[in-house]
Amino acid sequence: MNMKKNSSSKIQAVVLRTLVWLAAIWTAGMLIFIISDILIKGLPYIKPELFAPVYTSENASLFPALINTLIMTFLALLFAVPMGIGAAIYLNEYAKRGNKFVNVVRMTTETLQGIPSIVYGLFGYLFFVVTLKWGYSMLAGACTLAIMILPVIMRTSEEALKTVPDTFREGSFGLGAGKLRTISKIVLPAAMPGVLAGVILGVGRVVGETAALIYTAGTVAKIPNSLFSSGRTLAIHMYALWSEGLSTDQSYATAVILLALVVFLNAASSAIAKKIGRG
Image 1 (cartoon, rainbow, N blue to C red):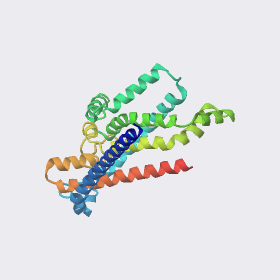
Image 2 (cartoon, helix red, strand yellow):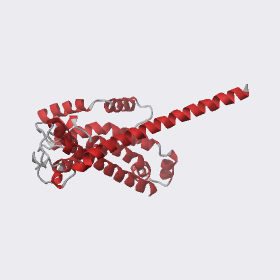
Image 3 (cartoon, one colour):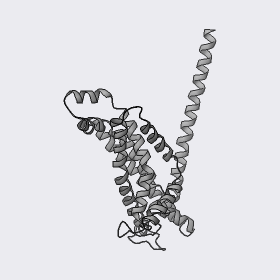
Image 4 (cartoon, rainbow, N blue to C red):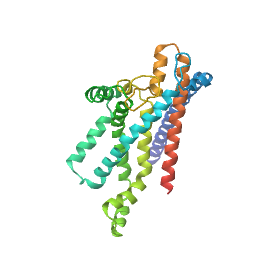
């Protein structure tokens, strides 16, 4: 009986290991296929005129969209990161455990993470563009994106704070430090790698967003004069070139630049997280 059980358990282990390897190979293969397809179709069309300061129908320059993407990412993070981390600190450090209000907030944030981006775009259009009369502007788009990524940053920050052992807090309190000083000097630095992981996820969603920004930031292909001016990001620029059907090759080139930008931002955030974690 024991030999049969051992043999059956070995067979199950082999089957599970095979399924895991197949899933990993399939995932890696699809990623390699997508990236290679974009690079093959886009790299030959990355030319100097693609980075001209001013967009025209002849050069299909992505430079204004690149600048707009960086501005949009900075503004969205500027609004969302302090609010998300602050809310996570309150829920994990100040709110009483078992509080019904905390449970409602957590359920709400989890629900907001699953809402399609087009719904956020319609909300941003009705509230920021129409009600507040900001028009199609960078500010309206940034505020909409901040609301989109706020639940992600908030939940990941809260989970990161939960991983910090209570002995860290108790030791700080034992040395005479107050609640605020303990959080700012002990708890938050220890949880910072996990917090930055949420920020990385937020950056990825901001850079690749299109639906929400079409309704709020607009599609003007130029560098905005102010926060109340319209402007398109790289994702919208790529979509516009493809939908027009006149510059599909340039749209693939834009996809390569967008991919490189996402990789750069994620690598920079990961390096910062590792440096903080070692410190």
